[in-house]
Image 1 (cartoon, rainbow, N blue to C red):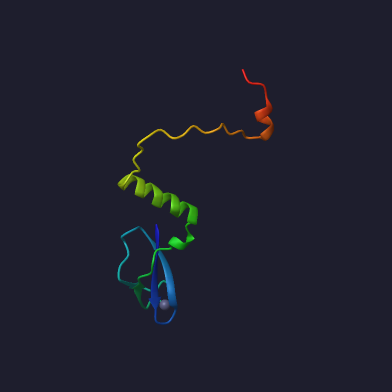
Image 2: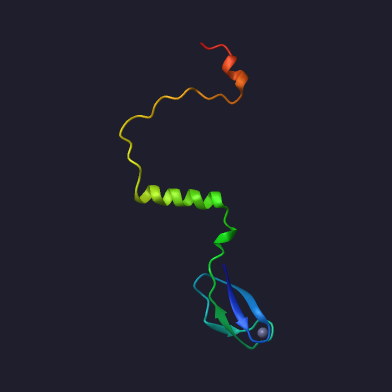
Length: 91
Ligand SMILES: [Zn+2]
């Protein structure tokens, strides 16, 4: 379901939930029954967390233009969850 916005002359902006693609350019205002015109607004992408947007952008970029690796990455020192784990005896 998608929320579509309509503007009624008497009631102002009214939100109507319909299946995607089922919105009409006009409808009867659900409050007063007068003619209401659809208002085209931007998607509510501002509600999406920035980290998620960055991850989706990175995934899209990787799918279209993946980074090419020319050599193996340099070995890194093992990371330990707790500093004291590094002091545990090793086999
Ligand atoms: Zn109305």
